[in-house]
Length: 626
Image (cartoon, rainbow, N blue to C red; front, side, top):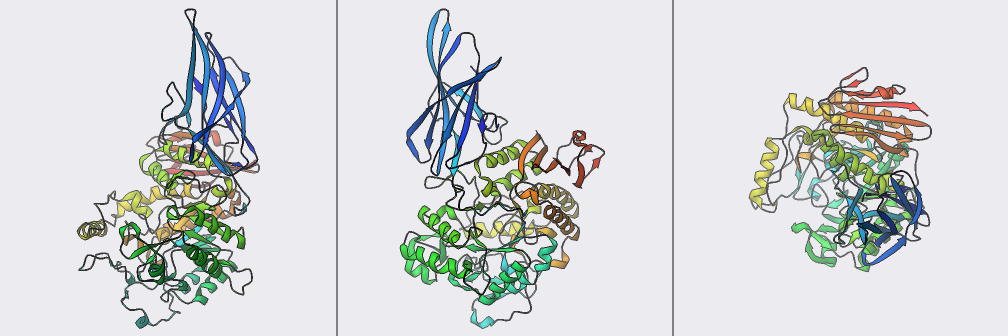
């Protein structure tokens, strides 16, 4: 017997997205007609996340039938923040050779993210390890409001972005720091004689240097500036905080930060700062008072502090957040939100209180989480759903970045489409609008290197100095592509960017990638930005995409659907009642015909497009008014 529930289709699940608490969702299954079979009972069964021992049951009602199927439906309404995981059971009577058989089957989810069958149904006679569909009910009252601005982020590693000559400091007050006078040289990448990477070399990028580049951000249509840690620390990455209430002297003074926020706001931009409460420098006062007895990922300089302690929570929520974000009764401009480092490691109570604290200042203040996996069902100390309206507004979308790379580099269209559909289905529209759709970060390989250079495989445990040394020597030796390989990589990068700038969520430019900076991992992906020596043609492509996105504000809230998913070829539509944008990307070796979209206007393209035929490595935007 064939029983169908394809959760990606509105026909079987509507609305096909997370549900605001108090509203209902309609679920439907289709049961194939058979002459010798009579259905007696159909049930929806579900558990609440992390409450696996109790199962809820809803009887489904007959709705209708056609020549092939009988349809059963039920409505589900939950009045509290919950995620349910559901499946179905069907009881039926089968008559064979005048013998009556009572049968009972389980209808569960089938297929992984790379499968064409993903999120469709499988019929089993065994109740073992049932694979269930996810459905969330969330509170939309505290999310940042839906905006009509198609945002673009610019991500800055502050020591390596821009050194303003208008800021002077006393080097003697910061001992054990090495200064690079040649801005084009590599960061120090080898361990010292004791096998330790000190991260104590500085290029002296500073806050005034960021403020002075506001016109540059304007040229890219950047609307949000995200800055890696800026507080007093030992290292150049500053994830080892010494003082959360003091700007690092190499970056500037407190007034320099407020001035940066003021100028950014004058230019219509937000400023998001990195928030790193989980671990601190081993030399900090926080480590001495609140050490929970562990080093973060075994790194001896990064001591984890106890976020369960009342005094620790009060410090962050009553001193840190107000000092840097609360501008309600202030004569200075402050940050517009925080990006939280490793939130998977925070206690849930700390997360809830942090979110409420930020939202008590303003709903428009953002809380963004670093997240490397699917954010609505993160299995860490129990199953966490970050998008229920009580934890964060958005996440860094590593999951989508990986799917985009798999499509651009390996023609894996199915994985890409399924990741997008899964996020559409499990991420509320409020959260989707606040996704940081990254291409690369300070923690990952530069995007053009990822696309075009030798694949990188970590060679072992970096805590072993010999392994770390060999690994970093390989990265530096293999970092730069030949001109021919760079050209091929750039052609593919342009297609990646065309998706990044049109998919739900917001594109993120990691400083320097807009001019083709190459690099593997830390520190080759953290070189100093030489503005006038990069790839100006690529920069112009970013600027043109930024212009298009800036003029297409409907992309901030448009719906999304996939029209074609073939190996190496995808077509999707972003649409509202007034506008429709077709995005077609071909990385296959076969020309693709797009004549069915002849009523649309070609508003942007890259690669080889002849009449209505898209050749390999080509992309096009087609737009029309509805």
